[in-house]
Length: 212
Image 1: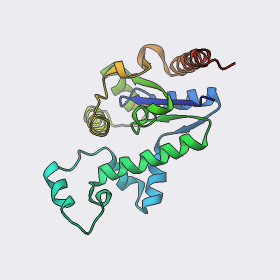
Image 2: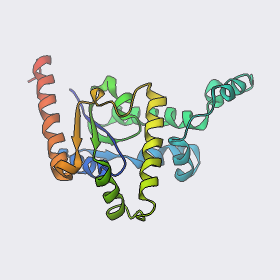
Image 3: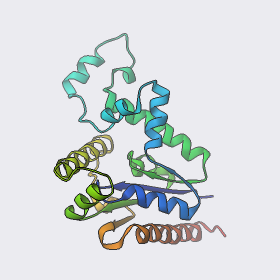
């Protein structure tokens, strides 16, 4: 039986996390976002804050990676930069969740790529620049004079982490099942549309597979 797995990538300030939670509640499944990072940190014995700084950082240079790999006393995984190790560990944890749960909503963490072979329904949430700045200030508590830099910094981190680890373009909407403008639609309607679109997608899958 096909599992209910929805992945969400989102621009900073678009409300993707809020929308993901609403969709999970409507579907009656678990919601994961920062919890993945916390699980990874727990396994590593490192603070979640420290891992977060590495999770979406620019990867180590190729030359440095080659120098590390020349050390015969370390395994290939041990030689990887921390940002790459985080991706591998998070991928394993996400895979374990997909094996044991019948469904969940995952925000970020390259979920659409990691769970592609599970037939996940991938969503991209975006919004105009000004709307994202406003949400950052009013909903996230970012100081008005820091909102612009915060938006650029976090979007760049997310894009780099996704692009490097997947070999894809984070902002390429063609790779997602559904793309929604949260400023035009609102959080509640976005969540409703995700659920409706997923249910239609699942119904078509079941019909094609001959599942009643």
